[in-house]
Amino acid sequence: MGSDGEEPDSAAGWCAVALAHLTAERPEAALEAARRAVALEPADEWPHRLASLALERLGGDAEAVREAERAVRLAPGSWQARLRLGAALRRVPGRWREAADSAAAAARFAPEAPEPHAMAGDLALLRGDHRRAAAAYLAALRRNGAHAPARVNHGLALLRWDPPRAHHDPAWTIDPRETGRARRALEVWSRQARLLPAVATAASGLLVVTGPVPAAPLGLVGIIALVLVGAASVRQARRVRIWSVVPVMLGRDRWFGLSVATAGIAVLAYAASLLVPLADPLWAGLAGIVLLNAPVLAVLRVLSEAWRGRPVLALAQLSAAYGERAARRDVAVALWIVLVRSWSALAALAAAAMVAQPAAGLAALALPYLLARVRRRGGLAGLGASGADRWLVAAVALTLTAALACAAGGAASLMPLLVPGGEQVGAWAWRLVLGALAAAAAVFGLRAARAWWRGAPGPWRAALIMAEPVMEGAGPPVRLTPETMKAVTSSREIVLACADPLGPRALAVGAVTSVTASGELRLIAGAEAWEAVERDPRVALFAADAAHRRLWAEIRGVALPDPESDVLRVTPQQVLVGEFPGRHQRR
Image (tube, rainbow, N blue to C red; front, side, top):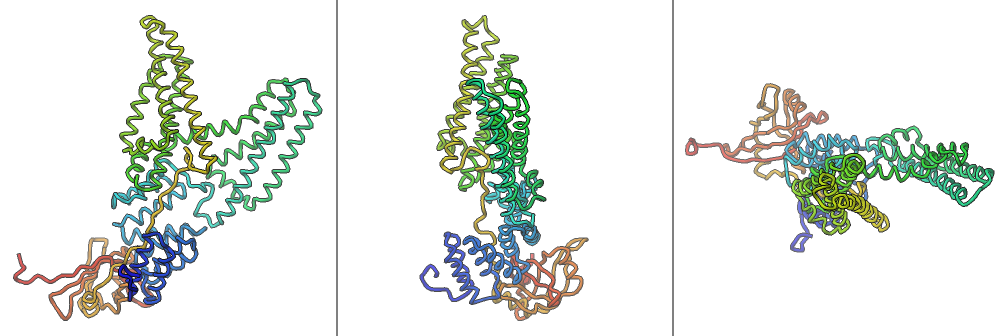
């Protein structure tokens, strides 16, 4: 119902009600209002767009696509209809390329609008094409700097974020549930292939330490472990139905691929260890591979992902859109990424200083300056926003303590004679460095464990989320007033302005045969006009009112050929009406 409690008596009125419901997050009521509008005016494309968005929010992706396709059929030149169709298609498995084509058509029809460029960025980001995504988001932000979802997702592109299903290319026609099933089977196998040999190796080592054990029982334990690994391999292999795609999946998600590969290496190392005497140093090396490959891989992943992307520039983008829920969450994760990067650099510097040149510890004084620079260049909202995360504050304080202690240790090494007890000060400083770094790592680990236990976002990249546009393709179309419709349908002096290789061109065309409920004009035009709109569909239609010769109307929009009806279909994007200048108006 309308704001006054009365039901609208027109399709446009019901569309306004549906739009209000969508804005207020009431998709069920919005769908009902959109269907009332469709019942009143089936040939109007706006109700179908609104119904599509409502169905999408209700989880009816297939129905949302059908409604969006109806809107495109009714107004193929509407960039908002194309945008809505692209938004609906990207949620349907195997139709990513169609979604990209719809977004490209929307950008071609309305290059000045930010939304099509933002959608192109979203589609590229979901494929892991960070460079193309960043370029698209920048194009959207040049058109509207206040476009918050584009700014948030641009920050993700700068961080080189991977989507949750990084193993699956959304452009594949294969069902993502199949690739997901294959991934789960391989993940379960990799965990079992690590755990069973690790338990057997640890048990063997423990038995050897506690006392002499005959070789036969140890060998039997090893054989049982290998048999169990083989059984697990067969069981999980049966769950994978798409082995031809698995190599590509492993290549797309590098950490998933490394996890599977290192699990296989652990099994081979364990099998080799069964052939080596326990007293042989080679056995200790093989046992180390079996026992430590998982934690080492986890540490390498944390450090590697901290040095991936450009988190400071990403923070500047995210903090500029801090009002968005996704931005607030991503800012906190990006700060953890910056902290882990700072911690790892400081740890490497401290190790080099303690092993080779203690004076190098003075370089740690740069860390507080760099963190202050991050705060300034990141535009934060940052550490002020991080105040809610006490774990992050504690980790930052410990890392800064380690940096100052490292600098103190370096200074003490340069002045052992000038500073009383300088050597002892240096020794305590290096102990403090190690303690503070270890405490900061423990804080990170506890924070991660707490998030995992509670099922909450953790201090890792997997906690980053995209910002979803809320009203893609829901805006009202440009309507023609009765005076404008009368002018264009009655005029016999219609000019079509279009693009030409040599510059803008004006073509005299025939009459406007009709105006649809969506505001689309059906125009009779010659071959030159058809060729022009195929090059560039953006046109301007100029007509003079036959009854009032001083009035003129200009309609800017998108023209597409309709070979079946032998007309050009012009979808208005802007309407201008005015008077021809008279003598009293001349300069």
